Amino acid sequence: GRFDTIKARPVTRLGGYQYATFSETFEMRRPSWPLE
Image (cartoon, rainbow, N blue to C red; front, top):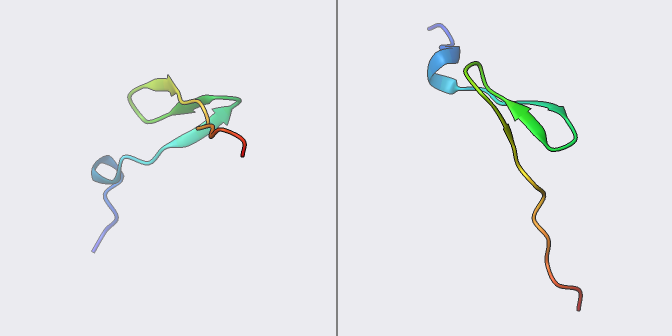
């Protein structure tokens, strides 16, 4: 069969904290954990 990119909704990294899909751009911060 054929790969359906609309159903897969791939995400691409733009740089820094910015990511994008075909319909939107968003920011996602890296998680942080307390130092032990």
